[in-house]
Length: 181
Image 1 (cartoon, helix red, strand yellow):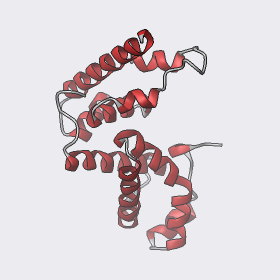
Image 2 (cartoon, helix red, strand yellow; image 1 turned 180 degrees about the vertical axis):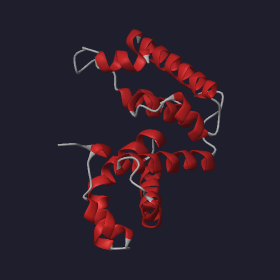
Image 3 (cartoon, helix red, strand yellow; image 1 turned 60 degrees about the horizontal axis):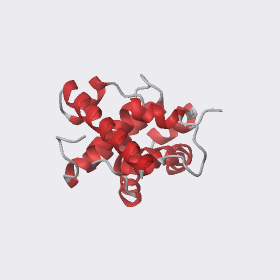
Image 4 (tube, one colour; image 1 turned 120 degrees about the vertical axis):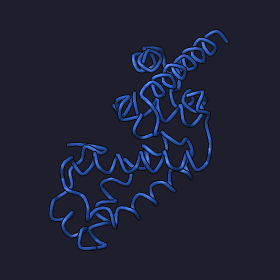
């Protein structure tokens, strides 16, 4: 059984949603509400901001679903809407610096430390500026390419590569500092 954005939604539910059926929207929310919230929380680092993004996405979905052509799976399409909404919120809030933005996260994921000494990846990510955290999460966890990140952020590919590199260096330094203290 698929989870997150990989879940499938019945074509009949999508057809009903396109006609404005509120029960169909509720069914879509039941399937995708949690994945949308989780992605928004990872990108924004704030529960209230993530809740706002989910609300915005599902309100926009009521109109946008009519334009869904089915070129990509519905979950991937909704994931893109969610990422775009979170990035828009980052821009509006003006949080994060454009100057700050695989090894550190790979090391965290592969870590075989005891639970008492395990590094909390989420708390490390929280130390990054919002925009850098968004790029790390989208690239490392969600599989976005630098080309896709460039388009999402309205920047060049070298921009996302630079932010990612600096963010990973910062995470590595945090891991080293935490392990020596």
